[in-house]
Length: 183
Image 1: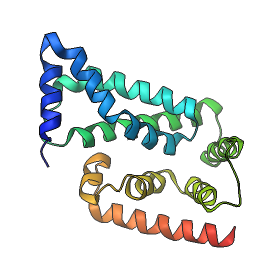
Image 2 (image 1 turned 90 degrees about the vertical axis):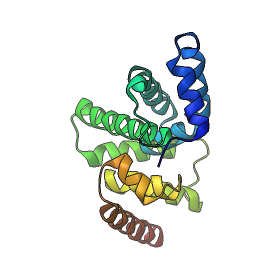
Image 3 (image 1 turned 90 degrees about the horizontal axis):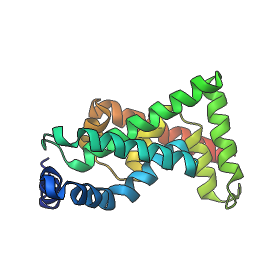
Image 4 (image 1 turned 180 degrees about the vertical axis):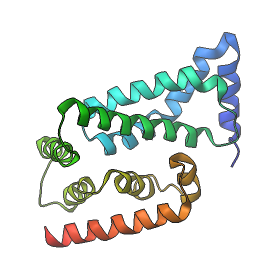
């Protein structure tokens, strides 16, 4: 899928030396909120999400010149955001020298510490269920459920087959249903 006309104009602005910063600012303005919520659903904490998003945009600034436009700009940005989020979670795991389950418990504690948290509400049960998923299933579920990303695009972002993604999503949904039913 090619880059949209809108994105072509933004990229043209970015690639011209006189309007480079304006082009980049417009790209950020267009995609910042969607990327923030994608990152936030993976790392949970608002401050962590802001830190990761800042790293995403630094990486975008450094690499945008080499963007070939053979995929949508949106797909390329999501790929960077997903990778940065997973890198952040890996660093958290190494930094605390604990198992992934301990990191996930920490994410669950951050969720429960949220002032809006109400364990009886379905949305919070869903969030807890999502946190109980293995990392890859959590990413696939979030991209499909919240971002409504088609499998074809998701396969470009995550560099895996559509069949594997469909299987991951199916398993994630089953685990979430089971979690909610038993909680």
